[in-house]
Image 1 (tube, rainbow, N blue to C red):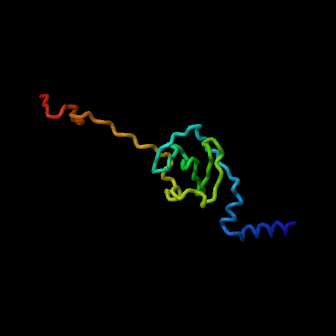
Image 2 (spheres, rainbow, N blue to C red):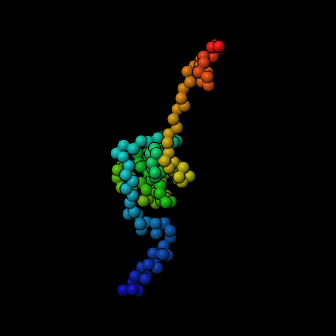
Image 3 (cartoon, rainbow, N blue to C red):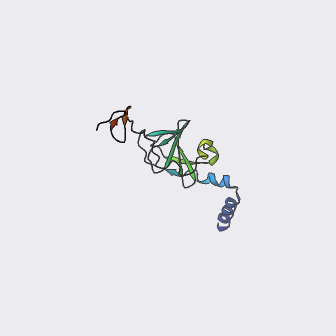
Length: 130
């Protein structure tokens, strides 16, 4: 019995890395996303869940999450995310540096200054109030 177990473990260790990666494909994450997470477009075809602790992307109707060097996917935000092989991750996501969109917030438009007013002094341009 011990010899069989040893042989099986040895065979597993000798498999190429991609084959070993498939062994644990049942790893799942439950991220606790809201039913309708706030999404922000960060580049054409790529949206990210705004202000979330994990990097969660939405590409081609599918959610993708990156955590600890692994990629996970889910068809719905409340579904369990399952680990995927790196070759299945959209190339556009693989190119994004890890952590870049963690807790990402959409840029807010700057406050608009009323035309004809000096924003520093609250005076209308061209008028002297002395």
